[in-house]
Image (cartoon, helix red, strand yellow):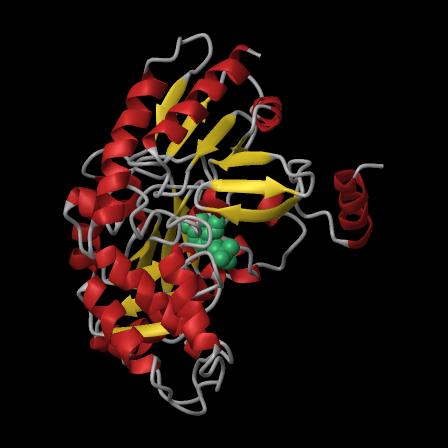
Length: 397
Ligand SMILES: Cc1ncc(COP(=O)(O)O)c(C=O)c1O
């Protein structure tokens, strides 16, 4: 048995089979490259679903983490610490808002945003007790908690986890008329991915996010943008809502906020919204811990330079030009923005990702027929071109 087979067998035997990973076992990584336990190198075209936007072991981020590891890593929110105030201030500034509610995983941040909207709805908007509704969209992916899967339209993610949390109305993504029809005086929030990641990098029709903004203002509901996958440089701007000049009431952030080092997530909004929480009403032992805050601060400083957004814009335009030039019998459609693409294939995407792996490129299917490309924003143009050459070979398979 090879080292890879031995380790894969251990994982198969002793971990729940809730993923179908490619059969490689990673040992090390640097920048856009991974090395497996046999010493083979692979170009990472997935970047941990956008959590590694700044590349593996980005030296600025590992240095910030190392510095903090030597100082203090966890005090819980029972005490303040010297990274907390600066982190929340800097993140609020980046978003143009007043306040931050730090959490850990993306799903926790979404849960926290849903709780925020309900509490704000009852205490500020004046919705009658128990009547609040929140609008979500078909094809959504916001995480895996019981409440979040309650409004999933993906049977795989949802089935057998009931009874489900009530209070959600789900309408077709991109359908402004259906959204208007679903909203009423008891609507406290609209939860939207500016681009649907897990659904296959679905970009909504032009003007849709602006309409969501307008309807939220008209109905007095919170527009909550889940930028966990689309945000922090991925689409060529800090936030994907910027492509339509839209400012949501609530930003939900995660993934790349932790620099690919640890889970760091947050809900960001103004004081009239996040101000609804009083001591004891919400919390997290690890949320806003010193190590998370130190890494998050460095991520924010890196985003402030605009360098990563610009790379994503320029290299993304190049990637989309090349993908768009692939013959129609190999590729049905290419969606996305910046260094992010959903490549719709005429057949199953899994065999293509397996062939790509043999060629030294790691990308992953999402659903049956979509291949998702989301390399680290630090990828070089030469490496990107090489990956796209391998994709063409794999597609011709
Ligand atoms: C848009 C969006 N929201 C929420 C999540 C959940 O994040 P996590 O896996 O960190 O809980 C994801 C994860 O893929 C996501 O893409």
